[in-house]
Length: 230
Ligand code: C5P
Image (cartoon, rainbow, N blue to C red):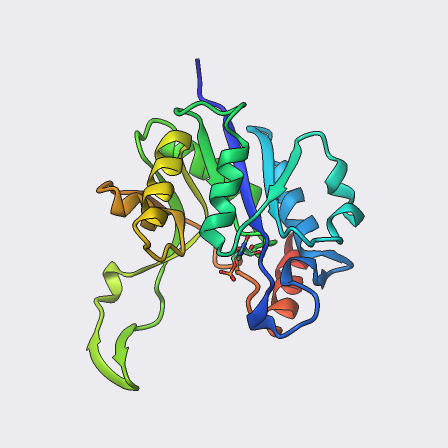
């Protein structure tokens, strides 16, 4: 039997870096909340069986989204850090996902995701035992810095920026994240938890417009990217 494909969307952040009263996943973008755009793009991929959204316990904006009542959308309560929210999402899938099924983790704050990129990720990794992520080669020269001083220049040909979705087998990802959190590691993306488990995730080149809304100036840029393709 072919493995099924699920998505976990961590959407329980408070958006401190945005400095806005509204968490960034609910900021308005081209007339709709960021999270609505993100979920519509994921639901456009027919291979996705269910999208599990991890929300903050005190979230009262979610019911206002039209996508909240979509039959393929499920919700759970997230945690203190992004990795805790992802793990909460994975645990909430345990009755419907098997160890060999695929899970794609995608940031709520990346609303410009191209459904075609998700399909390409699914196709490229279909036979892979571990999984992998969308990523972009670095266009800038990158420096390792300590206390305001350059320590060394990284080899640009070997440095990529990790995007989402990040796609792994359900059982492997859940175990790797659980172990990393028990070990007290700071985990900022799923690939890092898999690396700590001694495995090597693949990379699939993504699109530069798959930006993460982090600062206020990212919103007009995201609006521009959305308008380009709609
Ligand atoms: O803050 P950052 O940009 O790393 O957040 C990435 C994603 O993780 C966002 O979609 C945010 O809502 C989510 N997140 C979460 N739970 C947290 C912190 C962040 O689901 N405790």
